[in-house]
Each structure stands twice: as C-alpha cells, then as structure tokens.
Amino acid sequence: MRTQSPTLADRTPAVIPPIVCDQPDDVAEVRALSNFCLHVRFFDGTKGTVDMQALIHSPSAGVFATLANPVRFAEAGVEYGAVTWAAGPTLLLTRCTPRSGSTASGRSNSRPDPNSFSPG
Image 1 (cartoon, rainbow, N blue to C red):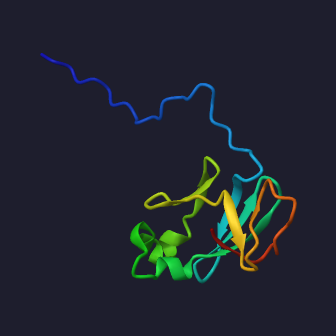
Image 2: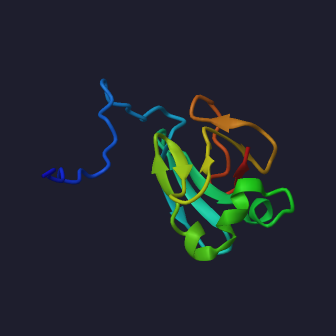
C-alpha cells in the first residue's frame, strides 16, 4: 500500500545573497489614497503623490485596468523597490517627473515639489 507524502507549502527559494533594495531611487514606502492616488516615499527621502486615475481609467490602461476597483487599488505595496499589487501589475517609479516638467530622481541635485509627482 502506498502512503501519501505530506503536503509542503509553496515557498520561494532563498536568494543568496538576498536582494536588498535601498538605493536612493528605490521606493521605500507606498500608501494608497483616495481617487486612485498613491503617496510614495523613496529611500533618499523624496516623497510625493502619484495620480494614477487617468492611466487606470484610460482605454489603453492595459494591465492597470485591473486596478479600477478601489479595493484592489488599495492593496498597493512595495516589493524590490517597486510599487506592486498582489493581483496585478508592477509600477516602477525609480524616476519620477514632477508636473513642472523637470526630471527628478534620487540621484538628482534638485528636489521636485514633494506633492506633485506624476508617473514618469
């Protein structure tokens, strides 16, 4: 008679050395706000708001269309320095463009208005 082996939980294999995302332009923290906006803080201390509403509700939203549900959008998190959603896309915000038009990143000497980011 054959015995059944115990079920093992799915586990991600350990990466050696472990991946550490703490570069100045990596996302350190994200918080979903109302109206499909994200509050983002980078490791260099730069922080601001990213308005995703136009992208998510556009006809060409692609994978971001899955975030049109406010409950799903609120599940935003950070993985490996990028904004992610469990059941959806990954948003790389390693470079952001302030609405004023100048480019800002963790390596830039200039600082953008901390509350006026757009995906870039």
